[in-house]
Image (cartoon, rainbow, N blue to C red; front, side, top):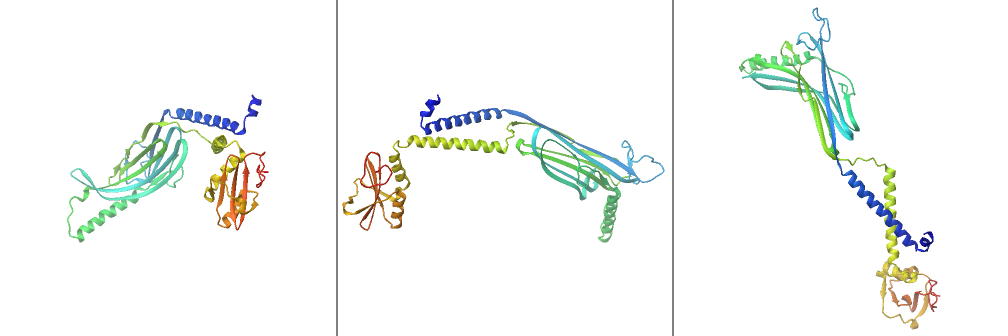
Length: 370
């Protein structure tokens, strides 16, 4: 087998090798497409947990601080409130996750008429805002008022009660100065919302989920309790292609290099296969193809008897002469040789290629012409 391969021309061996490599590439890609085109179920779940603690001012009746959560609370006794928020999400596989988080306080003043609450004033106080991207199969953090991964938000209700009382006092003052009469001032009420919103987005898997919960309690009543609004969990799943294989940069570069070399080898083999087996005739074909705009082909040879012949050793020298003097290169080709001639002031500058070494030319170069 080795002796047989040694007898083959180099372009034929190159063709066989390149063809086998490209065939292997095609089969591998077809297999990978079939393998990775199978649909799989990708799933995710998330949970948001809120917690609070109410701390009273120093007094003679309540010894336990924070106050037990099963009780209702007294606004006149309240010193401050601590609120915690945590969020966890799990994914069935690693993915690029864009996440964002926002926490805020919102003071709402309403007017109740006909059992309907009409918002007349609203003010938002941002607490935290975080966003980023991570590749993982799980996401978990507790976020505090300093924007760090953990912490607790501290709320002082009396700050917002004073704002609410200031609103009521100014409203009464406006009624007096503008000589207007308002009905039922006692129907005003104030509430404080402490809201937490978590959003996750994985574009490749078309995952887009948001959890938003709020603590809500009254500032205008002596007795208050906490009410939670919003969704605390999510469950998500979707069909997604399993094309998440890790491919390193060196593997990609090697793959491209081998593929490019195989293609070049195949092109080289095809070119050699289509080339003239006679190297001198092929050289003439290459010259005619490359410099076709500079060469005029005649069906009869140039009559050199009326010119002084000068042999040029290589075609580029003849080309240089023709371009510099703005002359055409004349060519005549038959079955035995090709002759390129440029006439310059009575001189015939000639470059001749014989297709057979045994033939002797009167004028020519070393390319099989002598």
